[in-house]
Amino acid sequence: MKLIDGKAVAAQIKLEIAKEVKQLIDKGQKRPHLAAILVGHDGGSETYVRNKVKSCEECGFESTLIRYEDNVTEKELLAKVTELNNNQDIDGFIVQLPLPKHISEQKVIEAIDYRKDVDGFHPINVGRMSIGLPCYISATPNGILELLKRYNIETEGKKCVVLGRSNIVGKPMASLMMQKQYPGNATVTVCHSRSKDLVKECQSADIIIAALGQPEFVTADMVKEGAVIIDVGTTRVPSTETKSGFRLKGDIKFDEVAPKCSYITPVPGGVGPMTIVSLMRNTLLAGKKEIYQ
Ligand code: GUN
Image (cartoon, protein in one colour):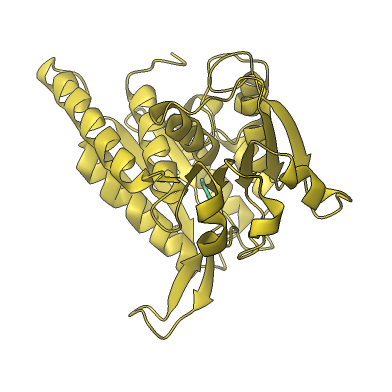
């Protein structure tokens, strides 16, 4: 079994980005600038956004954090999105999800100029991704592709089971794993809460990408000998052993699954750091106007 070290790969990519940013600055070009909107005080979102801002510093990007309380109106938020769309200094921006119930996430996502949508959530970017056109690809699936690439993991003709059908991970992941290029060319099955044969599907999978958000859902009996296991789960569970009072649990029962597989991502330190670094890669592309003018 080989551990896929997302933390180390992410650190390496950040160095690569920082080097490229330095070259841009040396040529007299503008420093890429990412803005993030954070609504409320959800613990998970606070941590993600804090790490995004920190990663911007490490990459040499400028960053701006815009905060609102939970009671911000949809109108106010949409007005800020329009302002960021029109702000020439901002190359890309994100609105951290989830948003409070009284705000339509879809409306907010669609209000973002797709040319600044470094999360890759806008329907134009999703559509372009699904037909293989240049676009911003959402961060978690893109981070997973990068891990498969950097570990030279074969995907062509393999049976890939994606667990979960979210717009952010499951759906784009399935679409990318079937695209006609490496990493891709896989035979993809998507399983979700209503699937009847989920266990059987997993048992025959060469690659399992688990994004259900159900801690330790995938057990050893569900995994074929030699399978590649990618764990997207990051559920916070209470813990007396950490300072924060919680720890992250993946969707894979790691201790029993690890000995059976050829490659596996740990939680934490697997997919998580790659998600943030993928956002940094999209921000660099935005700064260089490489995808859209
Ligand atoms: N919430 C969970 N993951 C993400 C992400 O990748 N981007 C944003 N904006 N919100 C999220």
